[in-house]
Structure formats: C-alpha cells, structure tokens
Length: 263
Image 1 (cartoon, rainbow, N blue to C red):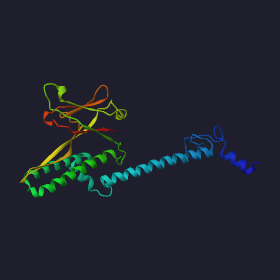
Image 2: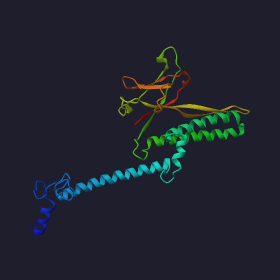
Image 3: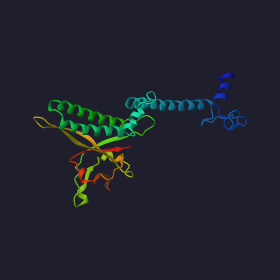
Image 4: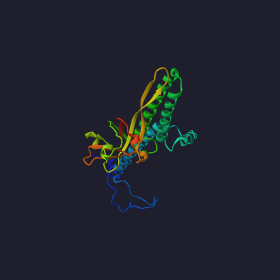
C-alpha cells in the first residue's frame, strides 16, 4: 500500500494539470502557470522536453560534422580571411573555380606539348593528367558532400558514353539518346530540367623524335551554366531516355561520358 508521501508524488507528478482553474495559461511568461508541452502530466512533459533535446543535439552533431567536411575541402574562411578573396579572383564559387582551373591546365598541356622538349614533356603530361583527375575527383566530392552552411546534397550518376553527333539537315540526327536505368527513374523529378555534365577525352601531343598523345577525361560542359547555345537536354515522354541536342556543330564529341546530377 502506498505511503502518503508516495501518494503525494503521484498526485503532483502524474495527474494531468489540464483543466485546472488554478493553473491558467498566459502569454506573459511570469504569469503563465500551464505547461506548453503536448503532455500535461509533469513526468510526460519532462520526457517530451528530453526527447526534443535529443533530436536537437543530433541535428547539431550532424551540422558540426558537415561543417568540418566543408572546412576540410574549402578551408577555414573564418580563421583565414585571405581565402575568400583568392577564390573570388578565380570564380564566384568553388565548383566554377575548379572548372576554370581544369580548362587552364588543359590549355597548358596543349602548349607544353607543342613547345617543350620531349624528354621533359612526358613527365609534365603525366603530372597534368594527375592534376586533372584530382580536380574532377574534388569537384565530385564537393558536389556530393553536404557542404557547410546548409547546402543541398547532390547525387551524381554516370550514365556512360553517348555519341553527340554534329548538326545535319535533320535536327533528329543531332540528338544523342542515352538510356536511364530503371532504378534511377524513381529518383528523378521529371518536372525539372535535367542537369548534365559532359566529360570528353582530351589529348595533349608531346613532340620530339616520336609523337606521343596523352589522353584524359576533362569536364567540357555543365548545364548549370545555362549555356543553351551549345547543348540542350531533356527527357523523352516515356521517361526512359535522356536526350541531348547538339546546338553547335563544332562541339560534336565522340562517345563522351555523361553524368546526370540529381539534387
């Protein structure tokens, strides 16, 4: 049988306070006497607050983890005030900056191949190829990793090669079609225009006693730049193919790799 003290504990901590005229609600904090929680028993109200605090802590931990990834990839722009101006000198954001660097390195590779001594250029070409691979890898990491500050995570899917033919008398001969895997179709919002990346095989020639061609994949187009004068992309009505229209005949590329980015 419960003791009077135990009965008092039960009355105070378990019985609901809802409807008690002695505990009215008020918008003024110092005058409020009711529980704002969904539960109106003291024990249940405390447990409700505890659960909400755990969710908040979990969200905070996730944010800190993502912020640390941001600092690792981008740098601590709070501690080093010189980082942001350096980025601005190249482009408005990190992705565009990496794409610009990749294009610059490609041009450097072509120049070196034409002008440098063959005994030196072989090593330089290998280094440039490695740098390009690193830039592409870092670009993918930044795009797929949840960058600090609440950016939206992106998923990148390689759809494989797709011939992009040059323009001809028929517009349909200038369209490249690439199948969308069935498991990917459910992840696509077909009401949004597709964002695509085109990676082409580029080469730099090394001149000397023997002419050697070094090939590597480089990002040549990303539809996030909204340059519709080069390519246009869309889905077929049955939602099973991605169609890419070549708008500039000089951009015709043989079997480039196509990435589909889903945000």
